[in-house]
Image (cartoon, rainbow, N blue to C red; front, top):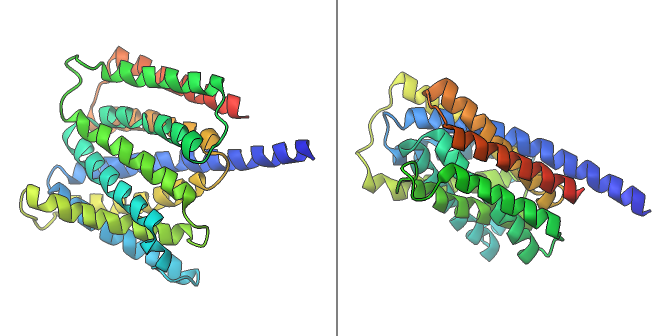
Length: 292
């Protein structure tokens, strides 16, 4: 019986890991398009446009599945808390990718799994052994190696990505505790609705909205659709398997972001960034191995 349960858990962990990798790849595509759009459009306008498209997409998906796009559960204390974390994460990460290199912002975001694993142990009482705590610590050292606090590469604007990290970690933990009566489509509607709120908060602090050109409009639409796929995959991943087993695959976002940064935006990560990224990935693999 114990062997059957362990095999079942392994299958669910693998499924969750695959959805997490898909989510990270799509988030990188989303980030790339939105960074391009933010070069000609105010950040608040990009967030609002992105949110509207996402709400419409998930609402259609919910209706086709025979669900109501909006649920009473969205007004629960837990979901309101999740929404607040969503606003913080989305708003500050959008500012980070708009104002700093994509590879740097994504590298800082890799601290999110560290917070999630610690939160899973403290909030959900999931077992996180000493070996996995060591792997988490090693991954955090890798993040510090990339950031090199006090060095020239760590600017004040990087604080935006740090704040976003805390927001996304809180959102992911709240997603884990979200009532199972809410589908990932309804969670998507709620999440993208918070993007609209984030945009409304940012709009007064930036330039006045402008009518987007064809390139900017195409970037917003493409980024939004990629975000819909990413958000769906992330929600499924966080509801599948152990948080401590699935979360390390968030580190793949760093690889995707570096590829996009180099290929699309001409960024050139230095040797310290590459070394830190390698350390983070090794730590993530070690954490997954120990969870198995």
